[in-house]
Length: 424
Ligand SMILES: Cc1cc2nc3c(=O)[nH]c(=O)nc-3n(C[C@H](O)[C@H](O)[C@H](O)COP(=O)(O)OP(=O)(O)OC[C@H]3O[C@@H](n4cnc5c(N)ncnc54)[C@H](O)[C@@H]3O)c2cc1C
Ligand code: SF4
Image (cartoon, rainbow, N blue to C red; front, side, top):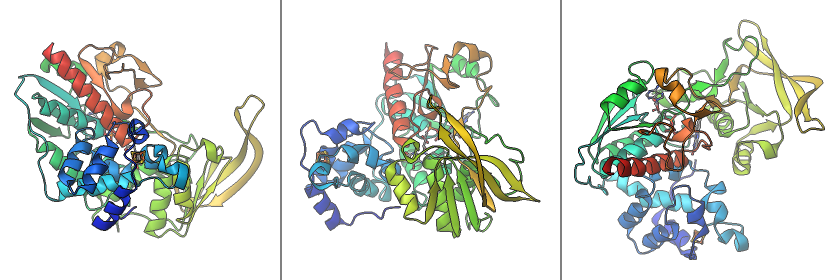
């Protein structure tokens, strides 16, 4: 999505930083990275020190440098916006500092003295791996149970290919595991191969970071017809495809949704060669989950975004041929309603990008003991659930904003809390 900075470019960019006291960029970073601190080290040519400053707070600082929506986090808060409408390019500087760590396989963290405690982690995505790494550094023994055949979660299977190239997700995973003390059991799923009660009996503590396994439906007839795809499934296939020639590429693609996934699949389709790509969203631009920057990014990549319309009917023959919409508006109570006016778009591929949900029936007998809200787990500030020996983080907890960086922070906070609990 963004090419890396060269050394001269990075030095010029680092020179733009004011090294603010109480830096607002650091406050805006969900993992609290000392941003002026790492930029200062880039200026003094101490890239290893700079990377350490980043990765000690965010062990996935490499991936986050590629996929974080910095325009609504650290870069939005940067004081350079006030005078120049151009923040310090913190994300690209973060990438400049961390890339050499992965390119040269530099070890930056050591395992502490063995505590003799064992912790089970369910899910090997950003939340689970962040928790596993911090626990291992603190001297605990960790077993990661992961449903998929590779670790990384949505970093490996969900984030669009154009954002993370060169197998970076797996290079980052290998580097994280090198710290030691982390055993991985891929193809092991909670609720299928073992239960939460099994883990609680065998381990001193459990962390749940299994993300959201289910995809929301449109609720239309013929949703399973050929040519109608879940955007997340398509991206997963794309990310795992060696040659890309096993994937259908639509001539006219329609994407339903308004979040980051909708933007990703629309831009990705354009990059794969689709001629016409429309995103259709039921409310206005301000209500879209995708930031203004992401909306602009899609539009400058040839995607048309249409607002205030909801899908009402798939137009199908032996496969999808189009989709009919009804115009929407807000009534006097602010509730969304259809106006009755209909229109349609031709489509040979329709992507559903209307959100994900937690897989039901995953907790078995423990379901009643785990407090939930809106189908997600309720946790306290330490990410502890209503069970005293079970913590949770990432997309599966209530109130999470579905970003890699916040999942990493959840894992880190939970690991610190688990370690305190195990030592007390
Ligand atoms: C299409 C898409 C694009 C995105 N793009 C961005 C982006 O550009 N930037 C950004 O910051 N965020 C993005 N996100 C959000 C981000 O990827 C997630 O918020 C983040 O990955 C959540 O991490 P997690 O560890 O909670 O869950 P996940 O990444 O979903 O990982 C869950 C892990 O748990 C495992 N698992 C699932 N069920 C079980 C089970 N029953 N037992 C054992 N293991 C299980 C899975 O195998 C997986 O490894 C995107 C999300 C999607 C869907
Ligand atoms: S807010 Fe901007 S200028 Fe200030 S420390 Fe952060 S990056 Fe530097």
